[in-house]
Amino acid sequence: MTKDLMVRVKEVIPRTYNVKSIRFDLGVEFDFKAGQFLSLTLQNNPALKRYLSISSSPTEKCYLEVTKKITGSDFSKTLGQLKTGDTVTIQYPFGKFILEEQEKRIAFLSGGIGITPIRSIAKYAVDKNLGVDMALIYANRSLKDIVFKEDFDAMQKIYPKLKVSHVLCEADPGFKCIPGLINAQVIKNEVSDYARRKFYLCGPPAMVEAMGKILTEELGLDKKNIITENFQGY
Image 1 (cartoon, rainbow, N blue to C red):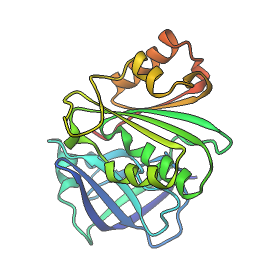
Image 2: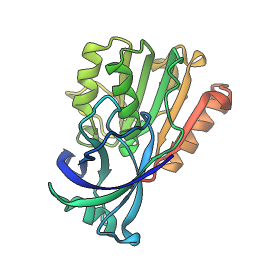
Image 3: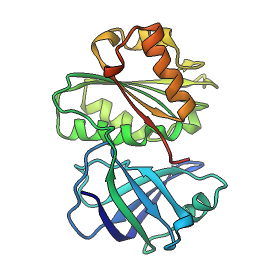
Image 4: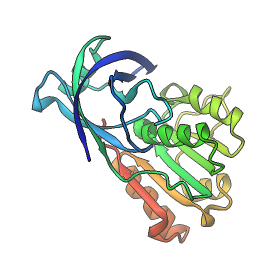
């Protein structure tokens, strides 16, 4: 059952030069599953309503967080101007891009701001010490575009079963990454046991479609082992 709430902005956190996280103080107990999304309405204006993935984990009890790339759209510009104490309306939870806790081996393929629900899932698995083996291949244009880099670095240090591989179009000489784009060979190299894993794909629709074809047509995975989320929060 979804809930409609008017909530206050608790904190605004810059993540990169063009990405912000907005944390909301709900003031009540809230229940959602890692990887789900919500609807967010600004200024009580239906024209300023969007669906955004929840980037916080259910284990982070004191707030609910969304993270968005700030673009030139009216919604995005208005969201980017939010400050502590402002109010917005949310409705949640939605979506089935969630972790089944019995899973033992999973892999994430993501690009850009599509990392938001994956951050929620990974943080939940690490905090709960679920023991699930997680591999993330995360594509961006450059080092400065990587969202939640510090979070994933910290999670890898305390949770050995999380491996993060960065793929960058513009490789930085001082940063360990795979230059180029995600392709079948990158997946084989970084996730050698790919045939034994369930894959979660999240990013721009064109990327999700392309990754799905690589997994099914080039690597022979069954569609039932692929979970997709065409990210709507641009």
